[in-house]
View 1: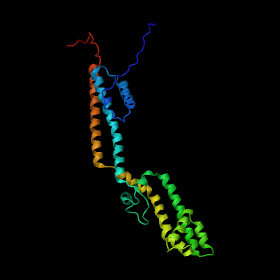
View 2 (view 1 turned 90 degrees about the vertical axis):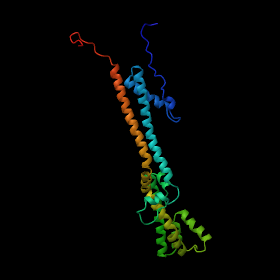
View 3 (view 1 turned 120 degrees about the vertical axis):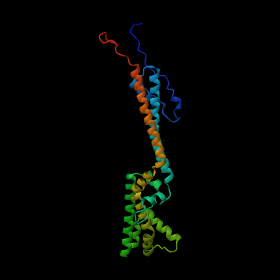
View 4 (view 1 turned 90 degrees about the horizontal axis):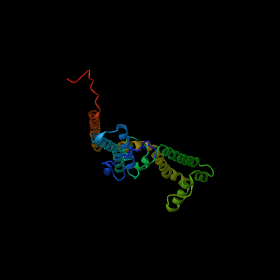
Length: 258
């Protein structure tokens, strides 16, 4: 066998805090964090290793607070939002807006994004335009205006009208009934949904703002401040321990101790 020295990897012993990891926490990420600290500080002796273990654990707990803050916001969102149309949060968000009451729920608003809202708005705007065109054709009262207006409507809306004529006596399959149906039923329905798509960003901002629970957040920030002070204190302890174990320079014969 060669007399050349064999390098043995410096494997860290198990952390005394590993048993305190929560079941869903990543043990690999914790081990990686610990290795980074030990590599950066290279502790010498049990005192420095003990302090460094505490520093690692303090840092890990501070990182938990990031997850805790997100959880607070999500819990608050869940308690304040609803899938019900024109729910309380949506009404608060649109309290100063006038006109048509938007057909929107706060839960639906936070699930969508700006792109989804823009796509939905474009769809409802097109349907409003079709209904208004049909209404104008009927108002002109030209030849075959009923058939033209019915064909101009979205297919599902035309079917809605024909089915309503079969179930409600106040509507017949004629120009006057279709005009009343568009004015009283179709356009208000379409405009409410269009307003709902347009109100999406406003409702989302309201929901995100209300997700901040200042009382619970204050307790979280107090814990963060306490852990930060503890972290800084431990770093100071480690620095003092390193200075106390650092080799002292040899005394020169020309400068003896008196």
